[in-house]
Amino acid sequence: MSSDVKTVHVALAERSYDIKVGPNLMARAGAYLKPLLRRARVVIVTDENVGRLHLPALERGLDEAGIRHDAIRMPPGEGTKCFAELQRLTEWLLETGVERGDLVLALGGGVIGDLTGFAASITRRGVDFAQIPTTLLSQVDSSVGGKTGINTPQGKNLVGAFYQPRLVLADTDALETLPMRELLAGYAEIVKYGLINDRPFFDWLEGNLDGIKSGDVAARTHAIVKSCEAKAAIVAADERESNVRALLNLGHTFGHALEAATGFSNRLVHGEGVAVGMALAFDLSARLGLCPGQDAIRVRRHLARAGLPSRLADVPGLPGADELISLMGQDKKVVDGKLTFILARGIGEAFITRDVDSDVLRTLLRERETA
Image (cartoon, rainbow, N blue to C red):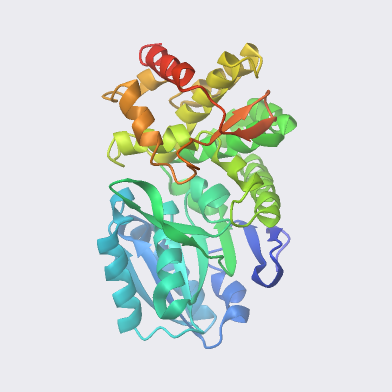
């Protein structure tokens, strides 16, 4: 529809959809959404913070397209991904008269996207939904690929469903309202794509970090599009994470355990946990003789230069190595009681393994508690 909007296609047969990346997409959302609607009506799920910042612009865009809308504002924060809020949301959807041919619109970061997608997947056994991700992390990761879910006391995202959106609108203007901490949390996921299988992209990030942080629109757009293309290719090859899609969890086995250890609280946001986890994954790879030590050092230095935590010691109040390993055991990728790790033979050469000596892991974690 516009030359300033880039399109990334997620090829999943009848579940295929487009990711639109560009400015002012909330104001233009009605035009993009209307072809998907059976009737000119949507329901919007957002949180109180995002609703205050972005809901008026979205609603004006829907009004201009003649689309009726209702909205609910959920509490902000990771704590909203729980059974109680899922029940509240699904009951609200039913009370507003959502039908199977209607569309539910998730306006917010990863928490709102995950919760809304899961609610859509189970309400009337499945109603359509679309994503308007407002954080960098959700634009490059959680809004793409159809993973939805909530957290439990046992761990992160252990209850959920694979349920693809109909459309993703990644409005780059929304990033202007992000605190730097949230922007960097998303940047950690961008780095991940370079570390998995695209060393030239990691090289590019090393040279363009300052522009991405300072608001260079072209640099941010390129980083988002490259990340979405990388994830779309992996999702198209393995939608339900039976093999290669697990590569997208680089750093997450460690990171989710760290999030659980900090109570899924503001002490450690998701992208920060992933950053520490990626550094640990490269440390472990080097310790096992799989990866050059210089690559592990380079990864840690880049994350630190970005302003992200890159060491266990950067996260105060963590439990000891044994408890962290126990929390890692709750990871949904555990198979026959064995932890699944994404390790690397170098930058851009990640691979999946369950063959990690627990003593080596425990020793590394104990050393990294202070170093």
